[in-house]
Amino acid sequence: MKALICSLIVAFLPLMVFSQNGQPIIDMHLHAHRVADFSGLVSPPPIPHCIPMTAYQIPEPGVSWREIFQNPDPPCDAIWSPMNDEELLTRTFELLDKHNIVKAVTSGPLTGRWTEQFQGRIIPALHYSPVHGHHPWILFAHGSQKVNLPFWVK
Image (tube, rainbow, N blue to C red; front, side, top):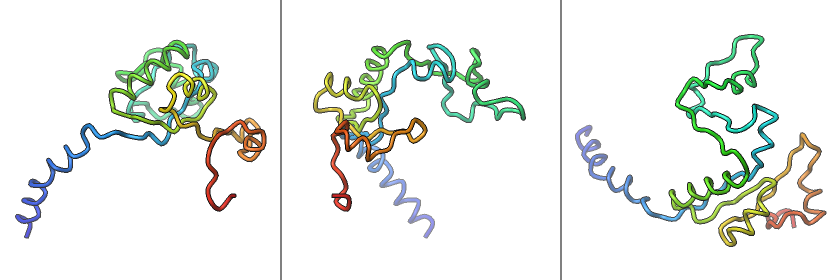
Protein backbone atom coordinates (compact mmCIF):
# COMPACT_ATOMS: atom_id res chain seq x y z
CA MET A 1 0.00 0.00 0.00
CA LYS A 2 2.81 2.42 0.89
CA ALA A 3 4.47 1.65 -2.44
CA LEU A 4 1.23 2.45 -4.28
CA ILE A 5 0.80 5.77 -2.47
CA CYS A 6 4.44 6.73 -3.09
CA SER A 7 4.08 5.79 -6.78
CA LEU A 8 0.96 7.93 -7.13
CA ILE A 9 2.65 10.90 -5.46
CA VAL A 10 5.70 10.57 -7.70
CA ALA A 11 3.48 10.19 -10.77
CA PHE A 12 1.26 13.18 -10.09
CA LEU A 13 3.70 15.56 -8.36
CA PRO A 14 5.09 17.01 -11.61
CA LEU A 15 1.55 17.52 -12.84
CA MET A 16 0.61 19.43 -9.68
CA VAL A 17 3.80 21.50 -9.66
CA PHE A 18 3.76 22.50 -13.31
CA SER A 19 0.02 22.83 -13.78
CA GLN A 20 -0.01 26.39 -12.43
CA ASN A 21 2.99 27.75 -14.33
CA GLY A 22 2.03 30.60 -16.60
CA GLN A 23 -1.54 30.84 -15.41
CA PRO A 24 -2.79 34.38 -14.77
CA ILE A 25 -3.17 35.31 -11.10
CA ILE A 26 -5.51 37.74 -9.34
CA ASP A 27 -3.86 39.09 -6.18
CA MET A 28 -6.62 39.49 -3.61
CA HIS A 29 -4.68 41.62 -1.10
CA LEU A 30 -2.31 44.35 -2.31
CA HIS A 31 -1.51 47.52 -0.37
CA ALA A 32 -0.76 50.86 -1.96
CA HIS A 33 0.69 52.88 0.93
CA ARG A 34 3.07 55.84 0.77
CA VAL A 35 6.71 55.12 1.57
CA ALA A 36 6.70 58.15 3.90
CA ASP A 37 3.98 56.52 6.04
CA PHE A 38 6.56 54.01 7.26
CA SER A 39 9.47 56.41 7.80
CA GLY A 40 8.04 57.70 11.05
CA LEU A 41 7.45 54.20 12.33
CA VAL A 42 10.85 52.77 11.57
CA SER A 43 13.42 55.01 9.93
CA PRO A 44 13.87 57.06 6.77
CA PRO A 45 14.04 54.98 3.57
CA PRO A 46 15.49 52.68 2.56
CA ILE A 47 14.12 50.42 5.28
CA PRO A 48 15.51 46.87 5.62
CA HIS A 49 13.16 43.95 6.02
CA CYS A 50 14.06 40.33 6.77
CA ILE A 51 12.20 37.61 4.96
CA PRO A 52 11.36 35.35 6.63
CA MET A 53 10.49 37.37 9.72
CA THR A 54 11.89 34.57 11.86
CA ALA A 55 15.36 35.97 11.10
CA TYR A 56 14.63 38.68 13.67
CA GLN A 57 15.43 37.83 17.26
CA ILE A 58 12.57 38.22 19.71
CA PRO A 59 13.33 41.39 21.67
CA GLU A 60 14.52 41.14 25.23
CA PRO A 61 12.18 42.56 27.89
CA GLY A 62 12.33 46.35 27.69
CA VAL A 63 13.40 46.37 24.02
CA SER A 64 10.69 47.26 21.51
CA TRP A 65 10.17 45.78 18.07
CA ARG A 66 10.67 49.30 16.74
CA GLU A 67 14.27 49.21 17.98
CA ILE A 68 14.77 45.86 16.28
CA PHE A 69 13.40 47.20 12.97
CA GLN A 70 15.43 50.42 13.20
CA ASN A 71 18.69 48.49 13.23
CA PRO A 72 20.61 49.63 10.11
CA ASP A 73 22.46 46.29 10.13
CA PRO A 74 19.66 43.69 9.93
CA PRO A 75 20.31 40.10 11.04
CA CYS A 76 19.60 38.69 7.57
CA ASP A 77 20.09 39.21 3.86
CA ALA A 78 17.41 41.90 3.90
CA ILE A 79 15.33 43.29 1.11
CA TRP A 80 15.31 47.09 1.11
CA SER A 81 12.33 49.35 0.68
CA PRO A 82 11.97 51.79 -2.19
CA MET A 83 13.15 55.35 -1.57
CA ASN A 84 9.92 57.01 -2.77
CA ASP A 85 6.40 56.35 -4.05
CA GLU A 86 7.45 56.33 -7.71
CA GLU A 87 10.02 53.60 -7.08
CA LEU A 88 7.42 51.69 -5.04
CA LEU A 89 5.01 51.77 -7.97
CA THR A 90 7.72 50.67 -10.44
CA ARG A 91 8.99 47.83 -8.26
CA THR A 92 5.47 46.64 -7.42
CA PHE A 93 4.44 46.41 -11.06
CA GLU A 94 7.71 44.71 -12.02
CA LEU A 95 6.84 41.99 -9.48
CA LEU A 96 3.24 41.77 -10.69
CA ASP A 97 4.55 41.26 -14.25
CA LYS A 98 7.19 38.77 -13.14
CA HIS A 99 4.61 36.58 -11.38
CA ASN A 100 1.89 36.99 -14.05
CA ILE A 101 -0.45 38.83 -11.69
CA VAL A 102 -2.98 40.32 -14.09
CA LYS A 103 -5.25 42.04 -11.56
CA ALA A 104 -4.86 43.12 -7.95
CA VAL A 105 -7.50 44.01 -5.39
CA THR A 106 -5.78 47.02 -3.85
CA SER A 107 -6.29 49.35 -0.90
CA GLY A 108 -4.41 52.29 0.51
CA PRO A 109 -3.81 55.98 -0.16
CA LEU A 110 -2.08 55.42 -3.52
CA THR A 111 -4.83 53.19 -4.95
CA GLY A 112 -6.36 56.01 -7.01
CA ARG A 113 -3.05 56.90 -8.63
CA TRP A 114 -2.21 53.25 -9.35
CA THR A 115 -5.70 52.69 -10.79
CA GLU A 116 -5.28 55.64 -13.16
CA GLN A 117 -1.82 54.56 -14.28
CA PHE A 118 -2.71 50.87 -14.74
CA GLN A 119 -6.35 50.99 -15.80
CA GLY A 120 -8.06 47.65 -15.70
CA ARG A 121 -5.36 46.00 -13.63
CA ILE A 122 -6.08 47.52 -10.20
CA ILE A 123 -9.39 46.74 -8.51
CA PRO A 124 -9.95 49.38 -5.80
CA ALA A 125 -10.94 47.91 -2.46
CA LEU A 126 -12.20 49.28 0.82
CA HIS A 127 -9.47 50.72 3.01
CA TYR A 128 -10.13 51.92 6.50
CA SER A 129 -8.32 52.18 9.77
CA PRO A 130 -10.34 52.17 12.99
CA VAL A 131 -7.19 53.46 14.68
CA HIS A 132 -7.46 56.68 12.66
CA GLY A 133 -11.21 57.05 13.16
CA HIS A 134 -12.26 55.59 9.81
CA HIS A 135 -15.25 53.35 9.58
CA PRO A 136 -16.15 51.52 6.36
CA TRP A 137 -19.73 52.79 6.30
CA ILE A 138 -18.53 56.40 6.51
CA LEU A 139 -16.35 55.81 3.45
CA PHE A 140 -19.33 54.40 1.55
CA ALA A 141 -21.51 57.34 2.60
CA HIS A 142 -18.99 59.81 1.19
CA GLY A 143 -18.61 57.82 -2.02
CA SER A 144 -14.85 57.50 -1.70
CA GLN A 145 -14.87 53.77 -2.48
CA LYS A 146 -16.09 52.01 -5.58
CA VAL A 147 -16.75 48.45 -4.47
CA ASN A 148 -19.68 46.08 -4.68
CA LEU A 149 -21.40 45.51 -1.37
CA PRO A 150 -22.16 41.90 -0.43
CA PHE A 151 -25.71 40.83 -1.26
CA TRP A 152 -26.72 40.81 2.42
CA VAL A 153 -25.84 44.52 2.88
CA LYS A 154 -27.92 45.93 0.01
